[in-house]
Every structure is written in structure tokens, then in C-alpha cells.
Length: 423
Ligand code: FAD
Image 1: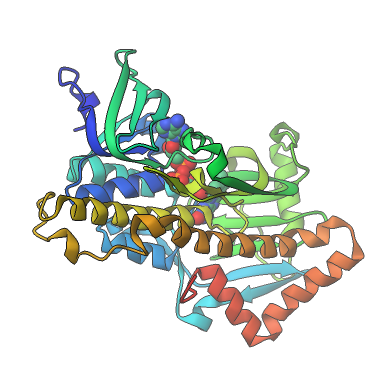
Image 2 (image 1 turned 135 degrees about the horizontal axis):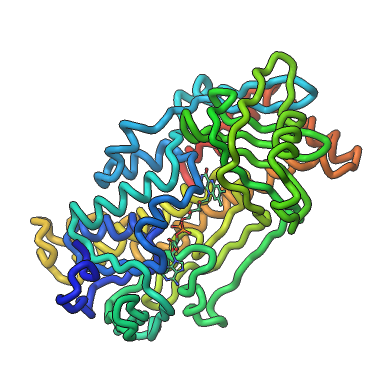
């Protein structure tokens, strides 16, 4: 039970680590810390019910699942997730199936993000006895350039300001969070990229019409199908940036999806009620470095990648593994011996990929690699719709190469699966 569920017990105002944000990144960091016995507090602006129902990602890379499994966080996922071994490009009016499973022996997992979040919250609170405070307001980070940082917030129950003093702050509060602002402006830069297009992101109460992800390359714009479960399917439609979802009534959405995903011999799309319809401005950013003093950013707080290649949550979890492990190693080493009662002295533990000092650099290598892949894939998706014969020609050449050159196919599979030996 977390402290806010015990109204008469004052919430502890000291912890080794304060984690801001209970998304996949923050909850994973929290779980890693709790597994090692490290005291931490997770602060989240939304309610538990809200975050357990917020649909977003679904495609999870195999190495991520193995890393979750090693940390005792993949039980439900391994039981319930679908395994995907292929994706399909539709262009020239035909289906072109790309079987990366056959090529590499690897696969993707498909497991809706809100189910993963639900699993991570349950493990953190109910199994690892973690302290999580939902519905907090006006979160502020203080003194991260000193040895005594703190995080303050307004308690939703009492309306009082609370301060939690800590040794480290993990900024895992997503693209619209506040922790990024606590970085001293002269010490970091933000690299941005705008694709100049929008995607209408849709969730349909309908089974997918194919057993795999579909990429429809069409002169009127990209369309995508991402299976989520036997009952729910995510679709995307390229549209002008800033377009209004109200311009896309049910009939228009399904007519456009059918047209852009049409291919000879392809099964009909299964229509269903649209339970989510929102506009995504397709843009990316990367904050460099991802840390300053005692503040460490992870996930979308540090870098956003448009959902072109389904990479954002995978990167967020990669950061979380490195940060969680590095914090545990550091705090255990500081304590000298067995401060956290794990039965292992701190010096025996591996220090992740360079520990806290090397954290930002280790994350950014994979971040930039995935950014570059998303940019490359964006041109494949959107080049033909630019209305320029030159870009149409080069887009089709890129696509053909995937199906004619084994080396190009292998390189694509490696990037799509995130399986390079080194980043
Ligand atoms: P978030 O999930 O955004 O979590 C941040 C948390 O912090 C939230 O719970 C938020 O409420 C909370 N918060 C915000 N501000 C504060 C504050 N001030 N104080 C405290 N808490 C705060 N990625 C993939 O890898 N594969 C996919 O298939 C994929 N599909 C996607 C489809 C869509 C439509 C979208 C929008 C995204 C998709 N992504 C995908 C990206 C993925 O959803 C994100 O990259 C992922 O959620 C990032 O996790 P995070 O923990 O960093 O941030």
C-alpha cells in the first residue's frame, strides 16, 4: 500500500531517489530500485486508473522483453503478448511481406503499453512495497546541482506543499513534464526535427485484417495498421499537420484506410468503432546531455521519437535499465557494504554501461541510432505523397532494395529489431 492510501500516516519526506513520472521509464526505474531494496518515491500527476488505461505503444523489441524478464518484470507480458515475425509493405498495388523472423530468428512482442504499465504499477506497489503518490500537482525540482536535491509537490488530499529530500532525481515525466526545465540552460542543448506532417492516430474496436504490421505507401499519404490485440487495432493516416480530428468522421477514416492499404489479394479491412482519434504532430527532439548534477532524465523527458518505427517506449525502457542499474550500483558502492540488505557488497556489482557518469552517453548512442532509422523510414512512408516525381522514384528504390538485396534486408531487420551488437 502506498503512503497516500494511509491517510493518518505522514508520507516519508526523505528517500534515496525521487522518480518523477509513472510511465514505463519511471516505473521500471522504481522497480529496479525496489528490487535492490533502495528507498524511493514515485510522483505521478495522474491517477492510477488513468495511467492503467492510457493506450499508446504496443510494439516491444525482443531484447527489451528479455531485459524486463531479467529484472522480474515480464511475467504477464511473456504469457499474454503476441509474437510478430513479419511486417508488410503495400506499394505498387501489391503486398510485399518482409519476414524478419525468417531472416534473423528474432521477433517483436506486441503488448499494449497500458497493460505493461498496469503490471509495473502492481509489481512496484503490491510486491516490492514501493511508495507511489498519484495525483500530485505543481511538481518542482530543486538544487540538483548540490548534494541535497529535493522535489516538492502539492498533495492532492491536503492541498499542502510537500518536499521530499533525496540523493538523486530521476526525471521520467515524459514529453510534457517539468524535470527537463531543471537542467541549467547553459549546460544542455535540444536538437529538434519536424517532419512537417501530421498523423491521425486511431484505435478501432476491430480485429486486425492481417497477422502483422502493415505499412501502406500511397500517393495520397501513408496509412498504417498495428495490431494490438484480437479485439483492438491501431491505425494511422497521414494528414496535414495541425489537421482537426473532427475532419475525419468514421466513413472518411475507413474509406481512406481501405484506399491507402489496398493491395491485390489482400483481405478486406475489418471495420469497427473508433475508440480513439487524435492528431499527432510528427516531430522529434533529443536533449544532450541527459543529466546534470543529481538529475537524470529518462525516456520521453529526454528524447521524443515520432512513432514511425515504434521506438519511443523501447528507448524509454533502455534508459530505465541503465539508470536503475547505475543508481543501484552507485548507492550500494556509497554504502560500502550491504546497505540495502541484498546480501551482496556494492563493489561486486557491475556498474552498467559506465555507471551514472557514462549514463547519458550510453543512452544517446542508441537514441541517435533510432532517430536516424525513424528519419530513413519516414522518407519511405511519406516520400511518395510529397508529389515530387524525384522523391517517388527514390522512395520506391529504397523499398525495392529491401526485397532484392539480402544485405539491405539484413541491415533493415537489424535496425527494425534494435539488435545491433554495439551502439
Ligand atoms: P510517459 O509514458 O509519457 O510517462 C510519463 C509519465 O509522467 C506520465 O504518466 C505522466 O502523466 C507523468 N507526468 C507528466 N508530467 C508530470 C509531472 N510534472 N510530475 C509527475 N508526473 C508527471 N513506442 C514504442 O516503443 N512502440 C510503439 O509501438 C509506440 N507506439 C506509440 C503510439 C502512439 C499513438 C504514441 C503517442 C506513442 C507511441 N510510442 C511507441 C511511444 C511511447 O508511448 C512513449 O515513448 C513512452 O510512453 C515513453 O515512456 P515514458 O515513461 O518516457 O513517458
